Amino acid sequence: MDFNTFIANIATQFWGWPMILLLVGTHLYLTIRLRFPQRHIFRAIRLSVKRDKSTDGDISQFAALSTSLAATIGTGNIVGVATAVALGGPGAVFWCWIAGILGIATKYSEALLAVKYRVKTSDGTMLGGPMYALERGLGWKPLAVAFSVFTAFAAFGIGNSVQSNAISLLFNHAYGVPEVLTGAVVAAMAALVILFGVKGIGRFCTAFVPPMALLYVVGCCYILIVNREFVWDALCLICRCAFTPSAAGGGFAGTTIMLTARYGIARGLFSNESGMGSAPIVAAAAKTEDPVRQAMISSTGTFWDTVVICAMTGLVLVSSILAYPDIDYHNGGAMTRMAFEKIPVVGAPLLTFGIVSFAFSTILGWCYYGERAMEYLTGKRFLVAYRILYIAVCFAGAVFQLNIVWNLADLLNGLMAIPNLISLLFLSGVIVAETKKSIHSN
Image 1 (cartoon, rainbow, N blue to C red):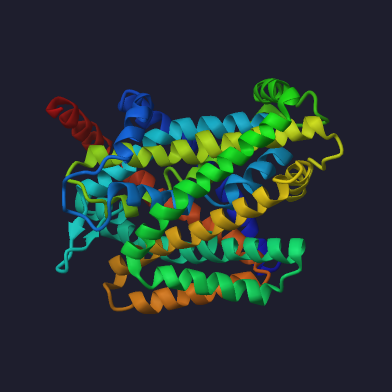
Image 2: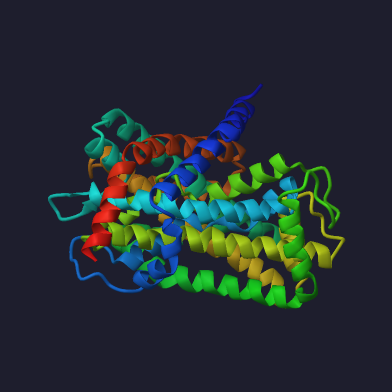
């Protein structure tokens, strides 16, 4: 057995039912303890576009949300959803959506702790995240260090090389562009933003991420209009297949309820990153004095990422499969390409735009996460070196076939989640108390 296979086997086992149940269990536990914070989602959306008068922080609350969305809205929102449908049937879309709904409570809790336990450095920079909650809230420094190590390395995988590789493969297969050229362009564009630090990343994400997501959603709506005769049947199929032993209709067969739920929930969890501890790192940089306010705003990231974008992608794919029976639904990548290419004029360009823009935004968002984890471990001494290495890995990921990176990324993301979930569970009383205090004060 080679090293890649060894890592792949560990990652597969790690992301099996125990990890899924731990994440979903935490989502459910926090949802119940906080009395269903999901009911405040539309109020949270309104708050996200209102400026907090506080000057404590590095970037605006909306910039923090945009940077978080930049990191979470990635290729998993398109190809990842297709993979879940290919392996788990149409019902996987339903369970992906449920994972998003429940994950709102966890994303809320993560951000609250990040703001409450953040620290201000001598130069006025705000630092926070699960490592500070673990150290300052629980006094568990070793777990804080472990989380930071996992995050600093995970950024090179799922947040960087995996994304640049997806961009280079797309341009090479679709337009014949050499991987070296694509890698050089992507690395250069990333460098122009990354070298300006968090404020540069925040400004770019604020200007780029909302229109990017909106354009993709509008494109999906257009495809659903084209497929309108099959949309209702697709919805019925998604709901029916989520609760039946085998997928009935659309050519799907042989998927059990457990298999469907596993792939759908796993993809939803992996897509929105609720419970992994990445998003609260940037939430701590927001200009605010109210942990609950920022927590509400951060929770909208999961809503947009999974409840809206992943669900719409899933509906586009399933309706396209029903509309065009020749689509190969056994392979996630092929299914995505064929489903979008069936739509004249806008289909193929929309897929290209979605993958490229989502992947590039993820590269920027995860650079910030990795930097802050590195700063926790070593201070500011190696931040410039980390940025340069990050840009170099961005180029390498586009040029080389790094199958092992995918498997290491899965494993490291799972390892990140363990210390973060521990902080959430052991500090859940603090989360509840802060929430109640905010309600009474308002």
